[in-house]
Image (cartoon, rainbow, N blue to C red; front, top):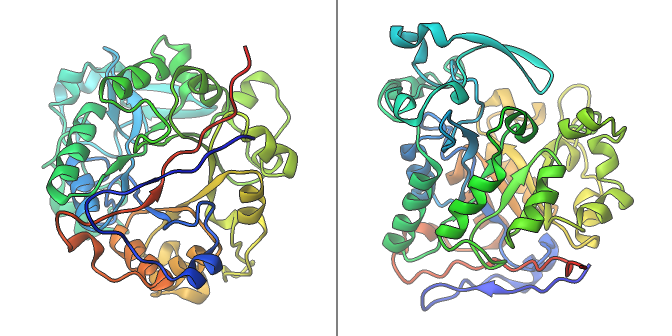
Length: 383
């Protein structure tokens, strides 16, 4: 696969990384791995709110991640799922009681309220709430305060904070349930491409990655826009849902074989791998030794971003309880090119520890240079 690598430097200074540590970490481009604010700083604020994204940036995130679903009137909004009873106060709105329904989404039967049954104006009357209050009770103090943002509002925030901080903040949208939305006439791909192009995100050096757990929509996007694409990889035994629909027998495990990675490299620039595929755990939940996945993907010319890194013991290995930074560091040492984290501050600190970069990088002010491998030129398309 033919690729070129470019570095985007902002401001007048550069980050100095010790060469021996760069070789040790082994990122694909030799540059710092990126910190991706997973649904914003969702460890500290209700997810997918402008306040969550804003805090993620202030805590050092290089990219913020809006998961995208559609409204009834075709507007892309940031929600992890189109079923919103767990992340909004919709159940407290009697005017929407008759919208509660049961649907089958990617083979799962769900009962609740769905974004595609609401106009944007109606969704804007709702307020976000903490998705996992039993694990993050401190975040419930923000329940009822924040709106559901549109993709355009997320982009506007990223651009505003980029100007304020003197460093580029990228966006990392995920298309959620694209086959389902296609089936109801609310395709995600075209609105996403239109918004990105309207905002100047239309090249391999644009600070954007598009990600998806499905394959066919990434292949379609590869024909519609020239920005970096990331194939998300779930547990090895699971399947992309478009494979389920088409009868394709392959699993995510098949996609990370040498043949599978070579196939991905024909339409995408990297993989977003479930972290246990990179460093697995034993039956007791202890972290084991790394697999060869990072090296295998790099050999295929693919970036490796991994998800999801969180500070709570519920999500940490048994042998690293109360030590989130240690877990994050071990993954960086595999050569990851990026890390999705609910806690961007911890991901930032762990990156600084592994790479010897002075902290706090994000507080150095205007003129700070953030280096990231930005251009991953895909194979020239054959007519």
